[in-house]
Length: 183
Length: 297
Image 1: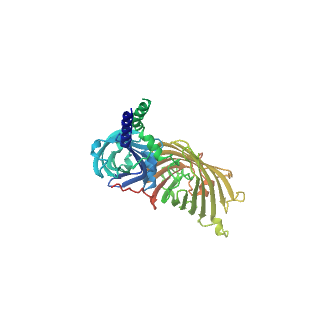
Image 2: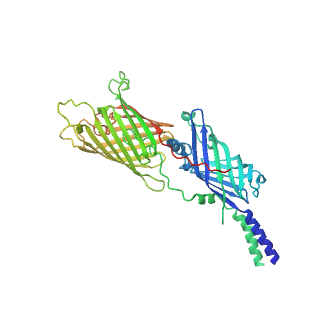
Image 3: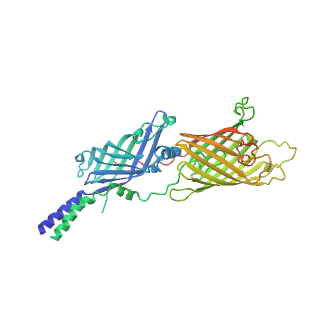
């Protein structure tokens, strides 16, 4: 009986060790649209992300209204005319590393990986695969990724009058630094 | 044995707990969503002549170039519906804070210079404050030559407008505002005209598409002398990036506040109508602070 109990306890503690979750509170996201006529940039550092070590799942969430543009009117148009943020206040991503073994959580270092998951922008869901760099330091991960998003994929319409100023593909940069969640 | 089941239960449920939706964790991490101010009640800072609750963002300046053409019923073909004769207004304003806008203007009609201030003290919020409230003031200087042979004080040239603007965005498409107003004329046309003249402005817009809206405004006067009419304007707003084009038709040709509000000689009934447009362009003098990039490597 005691042996069984002990074994079960070991199993539980082992499970909880790998069931660690990490939270990135001040995640940075940047949009960048570049055309010969105009470059447009928007940033936020109030996105959040969570990484579940046990399941390997990573999730991001950002409030559309939190993005700051260099020009206030662009920000208004972004919310009002392009992303319709009253109707779709958040953009989200939920996915996993395509190869979990690519990252060794116990050895500090920089690992190249790939994230595959579902992106939700403007109320439209799309499965995407993006490259990611994972840095492990003191058993806590950081993640950065740079990828392109096509406006048309998410039903974001760009009218012909501003067609020259807004790129069809927007470059997105994500940087998240995770801390372990103490429960 | 009971202990064993308890332990087994814990062992099984631990990974189950891990399945709890990650997004609910993220919602918790992000905290309660701040009540966001309602944006873009109107496309422009004016409906046509009437001020709206909008002002340029903090650190942003706005240039407005306005034209009012000649009346469309005065030899319409010869004057090409009035387009041969235009009055114009130039205006530049700047917002040192998101709630304050200060500006200067010059209008052709009565060669009027004006300085104005707009102060927003209530802002409509989602699931909160139901309307926006602003105070608007303009001081106007009529610089035309006096030709009545009377010696005038300089102050005779001046008139003041005070206005309370109450605006609400009722839906994505429809916005409406009410603007009780008093205009003080230091000098009035006849002894029977009061120096303080009251009125109420009504303005609305209906959005047709993301970038196009129908607008209308009406100004109801309390003092109604013969020969002057309440101004009524209907327009179309078009937005293209940094510009807003406002095309309209109105019985008011003046663009300075005291004159268009209280001294509109044109009448819709007689067909004294004017085509016109306002064209606005914003300039960012002080850019908003961008989010700081974090170091991950």
